[in-house]
Structure formats: structure tokens, C-alpha cells
Image 1 (cartoon, chains in turn orange, blue):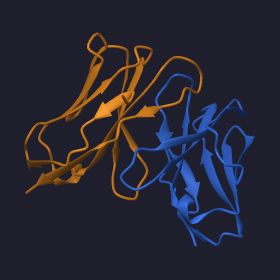
Image 2: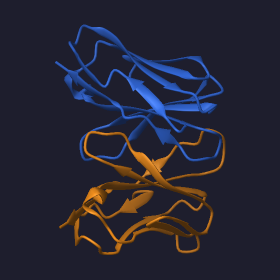
Image 3: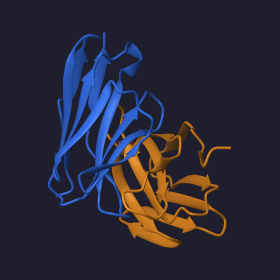
Amino acid sequence: QKEVEQDPGPLSVPEGAIVSLNCTYSNSAFQYFMWYRQYSRKGPELLMYTYSSGNKEDGRFTAQVDKSSKYISLFIRDSQPSDSATYLCAMSATGTASKLTFGTGTRLQVTL
Amino acid sequence: DTEVTQTPKHLVMGMTNKKSLKCEQHMGHRAMYWYKQKAKKPPELMFVYSYEKLSINESVPSRFSPECPNSSLLNLHLHALQPEDSALYLCASSQANTEAFFGQGTRLTVV
């Protein structure tokens, strides 16, 4: 079993839809949770960063962490064609310079 | 400024060549990382430098040699690579226990 599970998609939604992206994990030591957006042949771009449980909102993006269920989500409101990319969840445990454990990434396509 | 700058953007090298990848950040981060990413796969950690000292080496072959000359710079020296080493090489930086910021990567092709 992988430490972090993420549905690879592809996920296709119409413009304006609400998108829900999810990851589950097995390592209870994870406390730092990140969502990255990666366009083809580019580096990952940090979208959201959350420590421990709770919600965080930034513009059209909302990140949720439920540590009791070992489940994290990213919601994208009013999705745009420019949101078409691969979304990677990543997480790390405590300690300095901790290694990030990534999900496999979900490929999202927002259609006109 | 949350920028991590990597050079070159693209690199083609023969199996007998020696080349270096460079990474620079000016965010005052004390941890810097090299990741390797193959197509349609997530990034895989190669090396971690913490306070300019190598703290994690994920059993990477010796044909990859990292170097951290100072707190802002990170190099990856390449020698005698194989075609299967062709990938996107990503540099990242972070403060301890905070989010990691990635560069745009160097797309390496070994011929």
C-alpha cells in the first residue's frame, strides 16, 4: 500500500464547475500538507499549505485536512480552462528539511 | 519573492559528458532539495541539504553528485549518465517544517 493515494484521473469538468480533488494517506506522522499545481513540462507550483487539521481558503481554492480520517481535499470553485493541469498532493512529518511524500497526481481538464 | 531559479532550462548531454545543474534561491531558506521527475509520475526525492550539509541521500547512484556551496546555491554535478536518467530535475527550497517551493526544472536528455 502506498503512503499517499490519489486518483490519477483524468477528471474532466465544464468551465464554472466546482472541482474536488482528494488524497488519503496512511502515515499518522504527517502534519504538513500541500497542494501543488503542475502544468506540462513545468515545475510544481505551490497552491495551498496547511499545518495539521482544518480548512484554509485562498481565492477560488479551499484546502481541507481531516487527520482523524487521514484525508485531505482541495476544492476549486468556478473552475477555468487555465486550471487544466496535474494537481499533486504532498505531505511531510515533523523534523527539519523533511522529505515530501507525493501522491501520484490527478490530471484535471476544464472544458469550455 | 518565492522564486527558485534553475539553469539551464534544457540540457542534452552524451553519456561521456560532465555537466552541472544549478539552483538559486534568495528566500533565506536553509533546506534545499533535488528531485527527479519522470513523465506522468510524481517527483522523487534525490538529495536534501539542511544548513548546507547533506542530510538525506536517497541511495542515488554516484554519477549524480550534489554540492551546496552556500545557503543560496545548490548544484547537481552529472557524469557518465545513462539514457534512463533523462527526466525533469527539480530543485526546491524550504524553511524547516514549512512549504517547499520548486523551480521550473531542468529538462535533461541523455543521448
